[in-house]
Picture: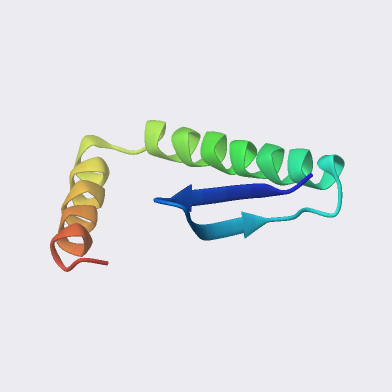
Length: 64
């Protein structure tokens, strides 16, 4: 299965996983990483969360 993303008829990204199982494994790994990150944030103190937000805001403003 090949996934193609186009804008105005121009191919900007083509993904060709070896098989659907590989793609599903990648999606599951990303989902698990997201859940771990959510758990880490949930365990943070309000001060730690505020620091994280300030850091993220800094990088967004820098265009990174």
